[in-house]
Length: 313
Image (tube, rainbow, N blue to C red; front, top):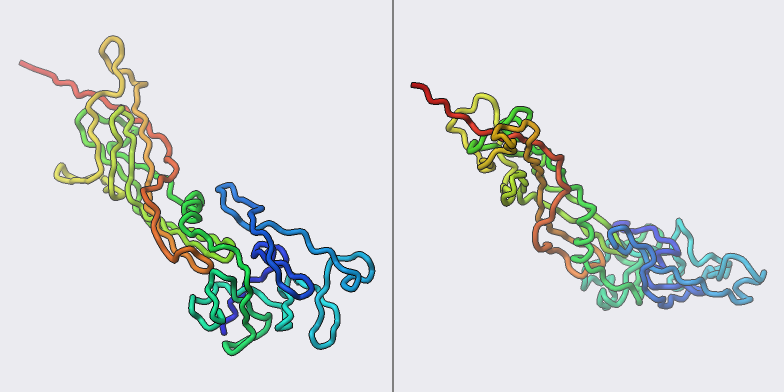
């Protein structure tokens, strides 16, 4: 069998809702102790260790209860950070398999995955043995809820917005201003997180470029990255992402242009989100409703002028 182990310590055993006392496995209260800034539960409450009996701790103190070697009777720590948790039977240190076997796998010994988890001894074990079922596992992770919280960690692109005519110059009323982001920014992004035996992988795909053109109208919405404008394009060139201003950016009190007048243009990308989950999951895959915004890009200042008509005789 592949070595599909996660090294667990007493903290993880607590997070699994299990306490090992003298080699026996008992249930513990499941709760959340450590919460990420996004509200993601990262572990379980660590229960207080059981008080050792005189036979377990003859010195009247020490680190806690001991387990015993099934062959020699020698005392053993019930948990070892680099070895796992002592189970008697089968008489070995063990780890919870990660990912867990599929429902119906013989390793479940006829149990439903909701009833517990499958563990394996810390040795080179085979399909034929050295795995066993442990009752009393934490509830399945709500994969969709975890994916929703994981959106805050997704490496969304911050729009590097480009305009033509170049904002360093100026534009005119009724002239199409091409809008785009570099193609390198229009790509899927992914992030994963493992919590309490479940690994959720979120994949977000860009769905639109939304731009506030600064003139008080509704946002410009483009379903692609837009088309880059390059010098030499003729009047026949077209793009699906452009905006024509209907008014100048500022007119002075005397009716002339005020060169300080600008429209503030800000763009941001939006994403649709899908997720998949392995391990102790409430579901294997799904999508999140709606579209999720990346942080807005830098503000661009655009001056818009009115062409003047000169009539000669």
